[in-house]
Length: 633
Image 1: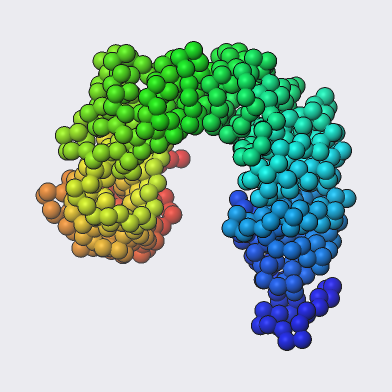
Image 2 (image 1 turned 180 degrees about the vertical axis):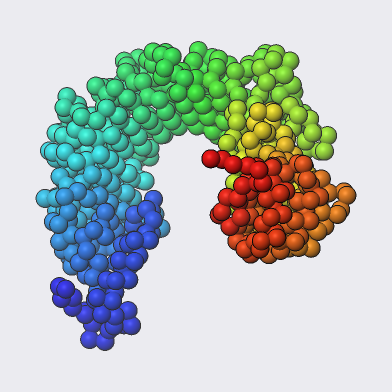
């Protein structure tokens, strides 16, 4: 192993571990590591690399650990750390590079410039290896300085480029004159810098068909923006040119020069449009440039945050329309007036109130969406009820309603909404109706602990197929099966319900179930509660210490029990042959197949009895035994 020096005359305990031992620990961490959204603040190997120089040196011995390099601007750039990073990069064919100023650390612009310059001078010879390159600085002037190092770059591996800053301390142009990146699929920078980047970008040799553009906030406080709407529109259109698939277009809070954007011309067909704080006339130009296409419009989602609209603006959206932070009623009405998509989400909008919702219901707007989400808006239960009822009257029933931060429902209101919303009703994080679009093949609920509040609402589970329940208590099981809405006959004909390590504390009716499986049940009383009213076809009992002779005898002689399966499978349960013979005699005529495994061997007399009892054949400890008089040869 390469030598690793201890960088202290009095090493700390973490430095006392031999490199081989430490490297073995890191290999385990690498195997178990999960990708982190923030490559610097968390995740492997960046967090352990910050412990001490010794740990960084050990981590550097394995380039496979390093998918990305993260350089912090929150403290002075250490030449020794940069030198180690360069050793790693030289051994990589591709790598991600992130240069990050932590939001919690405030430094002056001059210090940030010096650190950016030092890092970029060291990294510049290797930037062509980047698949993702991002910087996050406090000052825009630092990001502009960065572009002088990125200019003239030929980055054939680059997929994602992001230049983000929080304080627009300059309106200076970015230093882009030439930039080649044929595989670029995501570009993110302030609206001013995008103008220069688009002019420099060689769009004629693009290989990637897909592109997303994020125009980040550009909000200079003390100077003219020096950004005209036509320049921004042309830049965005240039970047999307020659792309067969336009992904996301995000424009957030740019400040433009004063004046009417008459020369503004877009050529954009993005499928996901996210717009924040744009002028109505700029918005009109953008939306009017989008030519309606059935295949694109049906999938296009539009998010509008904090907007002023006018009735002349038609939103080209047939997918999901999201309104966020809109305070004026008229703006909300203008957005909803012509919307014919399939879902609406309205979040934190003081302008979406009872007046607006009542107007929408009266004018029969929003008759197309199958889903409506209302989050923290000043609407009453009566107004929502009026809108849902208006959809019922025109035979265009609303299928999904989600309300968060809304008023509490009375028992009568809960019942009314549950009967009126057929697919999903979620009210203040309490799911009252669950239904799949047509048919859910399976539902798994595993080891969840619920508050035992009998007054709380509980969902109606509609059109659910197989159900697998694990380690659930009697309270939940009772409420769950009471709310279990049987599907059509075809669905119920094949449904399997499996309860694994569950605790049934009172008799439960499990409706319309072909197969019932009990697994790992230790309490005999719990097994009896599960089987009390079950009237299905196939019963499977596996590895249940609670399924004893006593339980089987109660099933045999209790006339209130209705358990009479046609197919019975028992595996690894502590029952004796005599108890099983007694049970089978009791249900003679109904059981046609049975399979017993993990049981004691049959003696000659028992074997003879089972052969005379069976109608066809049965399985005992994996051996198929034919009934008397049956010859399959």
